[in-house]
Image 1 (spheres, helix red, strand yellow):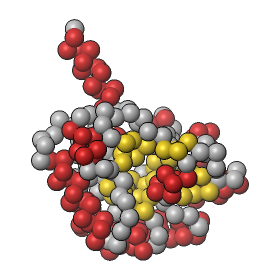
Image 2 (image 1 turned 120 degrees about the horizontal axis):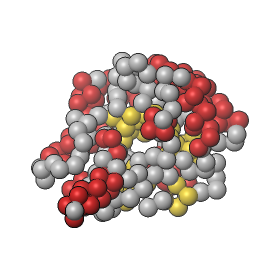
Image 3 (image 1 turned 90 degrees about the vertical axis):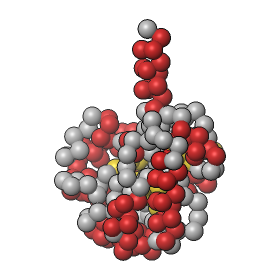
Length: 228
């Protein structure tokens, strides 16, 4: 019975968006200022240039959490993200779940991706987002040891049960949940994610009408008291 309870506890701990056993974790920022961060995961992919053009037209900067092996395969898209003024975060090298991994696996996944982000032109702090939001003991310990911040999110339509093939449903879900200091997670670079890209085109103007200003994760951290 104890083993079952420990297993259940480890499961919920590994998927928590707001807590980890070591180091700093940020799911949103406590602030009264109407700032919000749009974070885009899992690229760079073929749709990256389209997304960058759209963000230019919308007049906002986003934070891209990129996978190392995809950065290595598409260095020109990675560099374009940085050159357009967007922030790049570390999403590991292979996008494996970072639980029950060997002590050598974790630093290799993180450091190789950091190196590629630096090669693209990033000079400031690099935040980290665990694949699928999974972390338990080894990953947080290494992140704390190397003074890295784990960034999760407080708005993700996919995990809220929203129909992500319906752009209007995505927009409605985000508008309902948005609050000052929120971090939005979307996956617009994956195959079949055109509705998500369409939703971004509608969502940004709608939030601007509500008085929100879009910032990168780094800027969001600077805007208020960090939620860790």
